Length: 540
Image 1 (tube, rainbow, N blue to C red):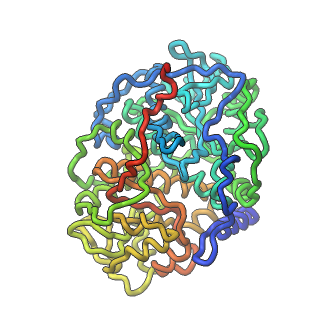
Image 2 (cartoon, one colour; image 1 turned 120 degrees about the vertical axis):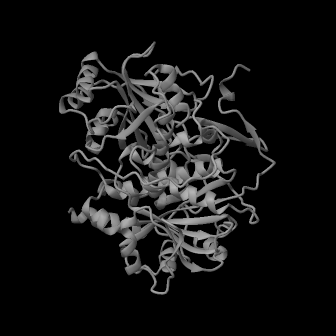
Image 3 (cartoon, rainbow, N blue to C red; image 1 turned 135 degrees about the vertical axis):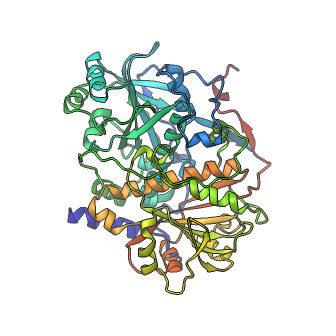
């Protein structure tokens, strides 16, 4: 255990907490003239425009998660383009009073989008083998370096199947411009959102996306050329992880690159200059100390098994899987009169459980560490109150030992790990602990994602980031399930951390709340005009 790294992580987590009498450090105002560009471009490259889907995959709502009915598609450019369109592409533009902004398939805190994506692609169609940056504004690939056939021969020998690779990175400044020191948390939430989006989209093409969990951050920086790229001050990219994409019928793949392949990539020449995102940037030093403390070393291959628990059955949405993906939005207001059925609610929770062979958690990021503390406001045939849903059922006794002694622990459904802790109207409490935001109290339910914390981070410091990734993946599942049910979700990064813990009776950092989420009946803002996702590329 690196004691200094542990000290930095726990100090960052403490310093980035919001409290009822003070918030975590932030600019305190929005410098709109200095807002970072949400799109990265590489000047000096010739963007290869990708085709948009002429027809969405025919997969139904359950096929977001199930794999067997999604027929594997060939690794052709049009299919890779569709995979990106339904995971990291634009979903719409909104306009009002002369202002216009884009929305994306992958959610982001404050719609600021710190996440960038890179692809290692073999030669296909008119595409040359290389490392490409995905530009969602143009729905295009920007070539950063060519990859010789020798590399793909070695990759093919190692993975023993056709494949390609997608990597994610974070630009902290895009989030810290608005949120200050707490932004490191939000950047990692967004990695989790993007990972779930990649898994769901890949599944619709009959592909599986698996984390290469052997790779170190240093190896990944070298592979992506970040160590050979000149960035503007504070606009550098943090390499997060790389995944392999392959035919879902293949039973298993390696979890890393060979030393020989990595060495060849390390000698590659990179092209393109990243655009300047804003006029100037503020150095939130705590973020960069936390990033250094959570760097991942090279580790041995890890494979995670989650079991095959029976599904909770409920009504299937009439929307196709792709339509649900495209419709996802973050709600800004809810109608307090809106209510979910008990079956809809339980099915939403059930979809957050990791299972073998089910998107998105079978990407094998880690074992499940997060459970859900839920404020039930308006679920028909279920009492209003405080509930705990155990995604990691082995945590039951630990929670019983650590939570308030007066809790009821009444099972809410037979054979389902949801427990009523306290029967009470929690609308006001939920609103207050989520930074006095109405959406947490006006919804059908809101929740805090409660993670095993100190023991996990002390064992491996890089797991701090991955706990937030897990939270973001849960959030994306809830976003899609809300849309499928005709409701809407919203991620909440602003909450009073220790007030949440006090509600539960937690007195140490054995568990910590890492993300909040709320689902309800949305109140639409009729002033907003909706435009097509790529209308700006159409001939005028």
